[in-house]
Length: 259
View 1 (cartoon, rainbow, N blue to C red):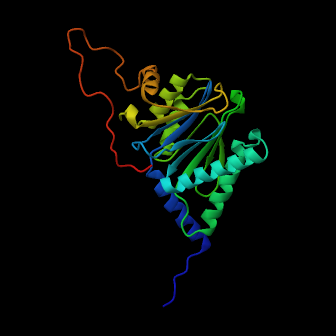
View 2: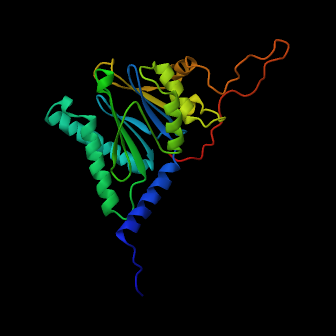
View 3: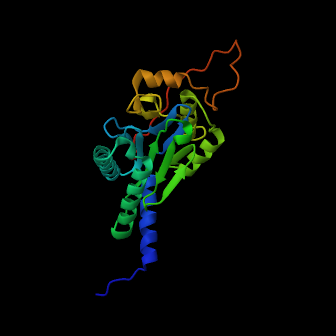
């Protein structure tokens, strides 16, 4: 029985479509610059599986897609950073070097394997000044994009990027940057994920040695309390003779989306 034939171009298109569909099923991740460093924000209902992690002293990692696939990439990046930092010097480990490593591996897998990885990755490095910050976004086929100011991936990434462009500005405070990120991740008229289902971290240039810090619990709640009123809030208070509307506080999570 003869086997069917597919051109190399068709095979590549099929693999790319397969990867894009898998990535789009995950929830979006936002990385953006603020006055003191870089902020990572991702809705994540899982308490055990992280989409945002530390790679090295000044370098953070964020990913969407299949957890087992991007976790292997993260661990490989840590091994690369540790070996090079120990063999040469810690300052020789850079975000650009890691981005080139990931681009090479992702491109090779996409070209040589039957199935491409269903992942998209951001490597972010904080500098001593805002001008030294770097954000590299890598796609499943090994393409690298040097982003400026912010990056978004996964889910409805195009819509998230559009909302980021409307709200983002340079030299924002951490609270303002978090407000912008949450607004971008929330569909118009939708509800934001509760604090317990948010994964938030920063690369703070003013911290000693290791710059990565997770924001959780009471610290994250205080930070969200400092954010400005969401755009969907009513512009005026109800009349004094009308009791204020009541209802359950906090957004509702669908709990079904992959990472």
